[in-house]
Image 1 (cartoon, each protein chain N blue to C red):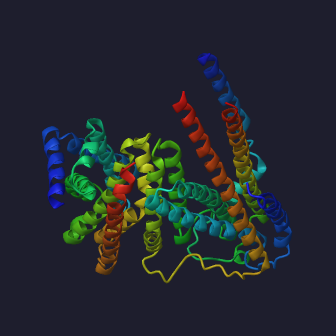
Image 2 (cartoon, chains in turn blue, brown, purple):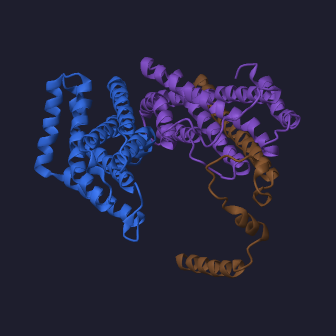
Length: 224
Length: 100
Length: 220
């Protein structure tokens, strides 16, 4: 099963390395988001307290939504999703493979986004790097876990572009709350490790529950 | 057609501007003045609030009840109507297929 | 429709017609005054909204497990109930809050969680309506995810408001489960049951219609 997952990831990586379309467009879109938020929220050259964390997570969610749509659009156009479902590997392997691909893409974007937001919005995000990585990774994983399932579900549906955010954002409300609050707690001058740990553990629980749920429901919802 | 539409719209806008310029209805003005209560972080029961911040309860109460009953009856009406239409269609088709 | 349906509708209608009388005779609440009477419609709406959401979730799980279309129709009807009664809750609440607390909306845990839950129910209906063929299963998946999310939404929204949960801005409502409240609860639950029966019937007949048309197409 792990081998199947690895093969799917490798397939996506090969396609991506050749065109780099997803990486560049997602990154650029993320930067555009940051710009829009900057114009909305920065007043007299300074951002309000704690705005950086909010901007970071809003950007992750918007850029992530776009990346999810694009990834599965690509599958739909080449009808590779159907081919993947016919592969003699356990169905959940397809889900995990796609999930890994999305997480990699978002991680790449966030590697550039996090320092940038910290800089532009005067937020001390990098004060506790291990906790920051923990929060960002678990949050991105939670968002991507739900998003991958929904995007795969919607591949053959009508109005799929607008339906993905409609379905995704209400369900990932705990992720954005925990992500923003956890990041804000990291950026605060009086750092309380208990607070960060709480949000981190909430995100871990969310990831465990929803990845499990997605693995269970992937087969029933993908088959007619 | 488009041009008359745009022209009509522009005239309407100008008229509206003149009409509402300084003649905001009284009740709206008072409501707006009472309008933004200071953000309360602590719950204060209604009889401890200063009298000018107390709104008449009746319109809110009546509005709430009216809204609820309207929505419920509206939904009931829509669904019943849909059922009769579909039921008629099914009966018609049943008759037709039995005849043949 | 079964024989008991029409009499039941009459009973329900009578109960709703009587409810203003019953509510008017309820004890006058001193701290909130007249506007507190909204509570007698607001709380039953909230309870029906929650019940309908749970019904939708369970029916969706059964539909995904068995593939029986009956569960799917129940889930759809329950989702419509959830959106309808959720809307009633979210509108009557602010109308009450404006008078009682001075603000239309406060982002406290219960209100915000209800809003998110309501949006998930609405998303379910949007998916059913615009998702095209095969959206029944997708919507069932969404309902399942929504139900699994309830504890997470509640915890995260609760701690989003205040990291030390001992303090809440809005104190818990003291209410007595007196006769007026029971009466209204009964009316609302009866109505929910009847509306669901009606809506499921519509879905059944629609399915029958589709089947007839399909068979006619195949013959032709």
